[in-house]
Amino acid sequence: MDASCWPHLGWVGGYVHSGELQNGVFLDRNLSERFECRFTTVKINKTPSIMLKDMEGSVLGVWVAHGEGRFSYKNDRVHRVLGSNKCIALQYVDDNGEPTELYPMNPNGSKDGIAGICSLDGRHLALMPHPERATFMWQWPYVPPNLVGVEISPWMRLFYNAFVWTHNVL
Figure 1 (cartoon, helix red, strand yellow):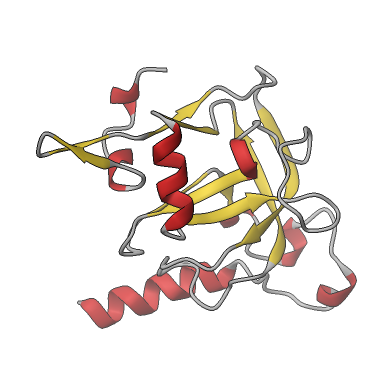
Figure 2 (cartoon, rainbow, N blue to C red):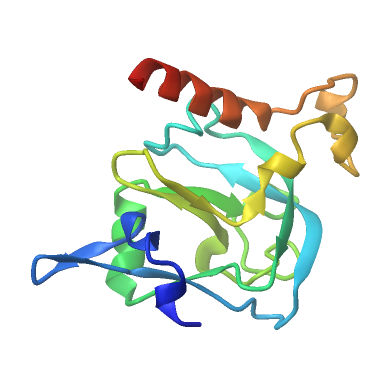
C-alpha cells in the first residue's frame, strides 16, 4: 500500500527526521488477504487519548470491517516508542482478555493485537474497529451478561468524550 494514501497518519505514530514529520505507521493488508467483517473483542488501554478517557481497562465487543487494517511500522523503534509512550490505545484480545495475534480474534494480524493508536497529546486517535457501529446494544450480536438490559453501549462514551472536549475547547 502506498503510504501517501494516509497523509495524516504521521500525526499518530510519526517521528521527526531531518526536521520533518515522517510517517512511521502504515495500514497494511490483512494477513488473511481478505476483507474482514465481524464482531470481535478489544481491550482499551490507559493512554492520553481524549476520546477514550475513563474507558481504560474496558473489554468490549466491536465491529471490524476492513481489508487493510493491519498496523505496520517503518521499523521496530516506532513500535517500541508507541508502547513506551502509552500510545497503544486498543488491542484485539482473546477470550481471557489478553492481547492476541491469533486469527480470527485478531482479524488483520497486527503485531501485539494492536487495533488503535493515539498521538502523544491524545488529540488524535487512529483505530480500525468501528465503534460507531456498536453504540446501541441492539447492534451487538452478542451481549455479555453484565450488559443485559442496557440500551446504550459503553462505546457511546467515546463520542461523549469527544463532544465534551470540543465543547470545552471551542
